[in-house]
Length: 306
Image (cartoon, rainbow, N blue to C red; front, side, top):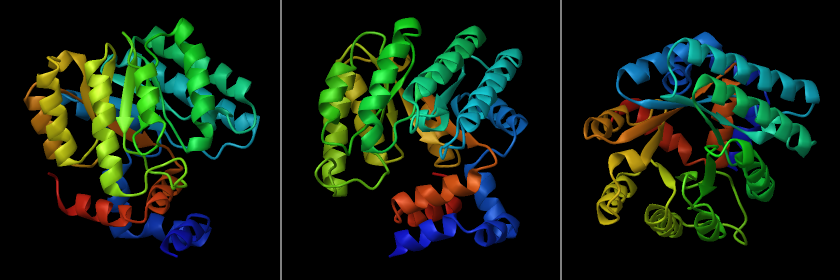
């Protein structure tokens, strides 16, 4: 019921105007989204890099249904990467890309071509790209595009979601030398046939997947805000003799900034996932609708920096 209400609100221009103009919600947006423009993304990136953090930038806009929208998204990433390179913010800053924003839903070849252009621009700027993962229906397509991109751009990163039952197998396949893999829990509403449903099951899967990646030859990127998962990640790094240069932690912009600073101060690489763009409203509402429990999560983040 709550999920339906949130989704309905995400499609309402009246609710969007109310959210956009209310003083309190403007504070929420500023906390979790860098801003609408490329310059906003660069300012946020500069501040984080100056604080000793790495960054991955996501230009918001995943509801792409026309080729011209996909082209506009590609061009924004090309502009962003050129500006990041010129500002000396690479390689500390990379970009995260959703293939759905590049045309995946209606033309996989177009999505690949757009992603290849972004990877080439990232390479020219001295950085790289990570392909975000979305719901389970796109997993095979995304991994296929990843495989094609890695032939020319081997540092292209993958994202795997621990709540999917298939992910342990995917971790084994992607744990080879040079393979960058972001492991997250997953946030989409998925059927029980393909995904674990309870938090306990997801946590156990996350640890199993972490063990596979940390014991492999690739470069694990542990995306979590969960204190227990972070502690286990630190323990596994010691167990598998991984120095801080051989894996990293990742967290969302605005979430647990003091913990991000602590980990960075302890010598770990910490990469902050920074969303930006004028489609921030849809981004926030979809994150809440995917798991209505995120209402509590974001609310806690507003009153706590730890």
